[in-house]
Structures are given as C-alpha cells and as structure tokens.
Image (cartoon, rainbow, N blue to C red; front, side, top):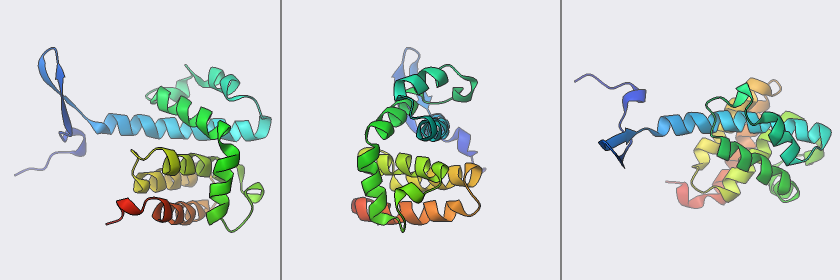
Length: 166
C-alpha cells in the first residue's frame, strides 16, 4: 500500500457547512514556526532599541514577513516575552552557564521564546520547543549556537516537563 505524503495525513476532523472538513495541524505548525521566527526578530530589535511591544507589533503586523504566520501567536509571544523578560531571564539563568547579559542577542531572543513556551504554553510539546529553537539558531544564530540552545532548552524541558517524558 502506498504511503501518504505528510501533507496528506488526516489529523483531525471538524464540522463544516459541507459535512465534515479535514483540517491539518501542519498549517498551524507552519504558521507557528513563522510566528516564532518573526517574534525572534522583534525581540532582537526590542533588545537593541527598547521600543515598546506595541510599537514593534505595529511595525510588523501586515508586513510581508508575517505572511502565513499565526498572527495571534506572534503577538502573544512578543507581548508576553517582553512583559515577562525579567522572570524569563531568571529561568534561563537556572540552566545557563553564563549570565543572560553575556548571551548573544539572537540566542537570548530564542531562549526567551523557548522558556516562555516551556513555562506557559503546555499545549506545545517540549520537544517542539527545542526543535524550533534549534532551527532558529541554526538559521540566525552564531556558529554552533544551536548546540547551546539545544542543551539549555533540553535541560529546562526535562526539568519543567517531567510528565511528557516517556
């Protein structure tokens, strides 16, 4: 029997006006990935300029970079990471081998998102948090920065999400 391509997998069913509609979590996952990427860029800019989250969101909402993104999730990440930055930095410090002030700004932005998701978004599996952070770091971070992101988020995920470990 031939295998279906991942984009064809039936992941959930929901009612629609035409009977039942098949919806895929793949689009939601892709939208959240784009939202994380854009949120990382906004948090990077926020660290440099200290503009308010609302000002930065106004610059990004409707921009081409957000095409296909889960805009609500993007807004949540930016607002919550900026508002909770001192508390998130304390969580980062529990697992980091250096003060957060010494972190690269890109890595710091990625870790803010990752720690927010680990602490506050229990609907996001911790392995997804790690993978998304590593992918962002590979794309935008320093050489081998993804290894640091992986180690730190893995350590935090194991400590904070014990129920998810099998």
